[in-house]
Structure formats: C-alpha cells, structure tokens
Image 1 (cartoon, rainbow, N blue to C red):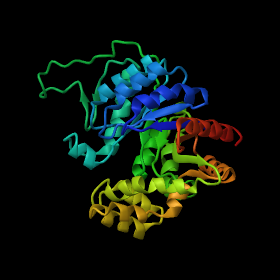
Image 2: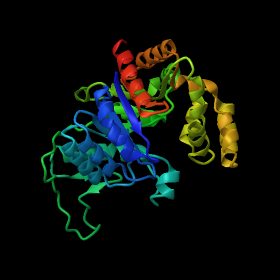
Image 3: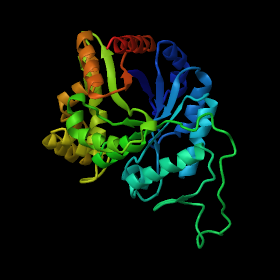
Image 4: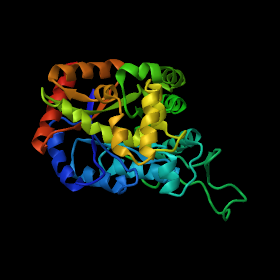
Length: 348
C-alpha cells in the first residue's frame, strides 16, 4: 500500500514544500495537489518537481472543463518531463457550482467528456497525429467550423512516458464504472471501507469486466485523516466543517453528489438535515449533524491498535494507495506520523 499526502491549497504552500524532502526521506510515496478555485495546481506541481527527487506527484484534481483535452495532455507530458516520469494526471468533473460559477462553462455530459478526454490524452502521449471525432470534441475542427485551416498535428516533444497514469475522482455509480473501465486509478471522497462494496462494488465490477488488461490493476486511492495516540480522538472533530461543506454546501438541493453519497451510505435523514442547515447559513449546526461514525470510519485517528485495524480494513476493501492528512501540532509530529503509517502499512 502506497502512502500519499495532499497539500493544502488554502495557504502555507511554500513552507509545506520546503518540508517535502523530509517527508520523501520518511517514505512518502506520492503527493497530491488540488486545484478547486484556488491557485492553479500546475505551477505548484512544477515547483514540487524541482524540490524533490523520488516523490511521485499528482494533480488531485484538474477539472475536465477548465482546459481543452489537448492542453491537459500537453500539461501532463510537461509535468512528467520536469519530474523525470513521476507525474499522475488526476482529473475529475468537479461540480456545477465551480464549473459554471467560476469558469463560466456549462456543466454537461461529464461521463462522455471524461471518456473522450482520456482517449485524446493517450493519443497525444503516443505522438499520433491527433484526429478525434467525438460527440463533444472534434479535432481538428471539421469543415464548416472555424477557418477550415486546421490539420492533424502530433506533439512536438517526445514524452518521457506514453502511458502517463490517469486518475479519476468519481463517486457516482456510472462515473465509477467508467473509471474502472478506462483509468489507471480511482479516487473517491469520504471512503468508508465497510460500505465501499455495497455502494460501489457493482459499478466497479461492471467497469473491470470491460477493462483492457494492459492497464493493469486499478489503483484505489482512499483518503483519511491520520493521528495516532491514546489522546487524539478529539481530532475527529476537525473533520466536521469539511464534511458539512461538501455534504451540505457543494451543490444545490437535488444536485449535490456528496449529499447523495451520504444518503447511499445510509444517513438519509442526516444528509437532508446537514444540507438544509448549511444552505440556510447555519454552518456550525450543519457540522454538528455530521454522523460521528462517518468521521470515525473514514479516518485513521485513535490508538495504534485502532489505526492498525482501520488500515487493515482499508486494504481488505481494495485500497492500494492511502492518501493521508497527518494531524499534529508541528512538522516533526506530522513527519513522525508519515514514518509510522508507512511502517504499519508495510506490516499488513
């Protein structure tokens, strides 16, 4: 099981990157940089590539609507080049709030677009003369569109790898099925190992049944806050505001994927209460309604024995990469947590 860590996009980026060399020595395998509606992830990933040697880097995630498919492919090839073949292209659809509210682009057909984008990216990385006739992307533009001067081109540079890994963030059944079919990795949010099979098992099986064996096994990236000790359970409460934000505020009534996931986990009443309170501006009250069991089971927080049990549950459910958020009072404490969880994962 690989151990990864996500970098906070809200601030303190340079300070965190300065510490990455020590995390790298401690055994950290991969670092993820989110984008949301913050600074772009690409410039930050390039900065990380220059500051590290072995550590894999990944976008976590770039939205599929904010760049053309070809630019996504060029960006991935560029980051793979400057990192010496250490980059994973993490993509996802995000949601209407961000795509239409921040980028001003219609949020349409996320599944079909994802399939076409991945196909286009892989053609670019293989340095084929790019021709794609799809429902949503036509490259070059066909006759009657544009100037008519477009012609098939191939990437000028030779990529370090023609098979850059593609990771897709997905939680809906159809999205997960598509991911299991065509992607190298899958990253769900709010991952509960005990409920993963019930919620996603059918979709994963359907996708894998159509999967090209050349892609290898699907990398399953589980996320979890991490704190180990006899007096750390209060750290679980730190997860409430973020869970409430997603379950309650990341979308409108009837159009919130995270709220739907909470309902599919079995907390229908709580999901509705969280959303009603959050959309009414009562964020603290919404956070208080987040089920304690959700916070506990999607985290690695507690005594060492408890964390070992949760790690085993993650692995048994299919997790192959654990994306942790170490919670401690200082860098030394966070570093110790990475060292410890790496050691514990190796024992499984």
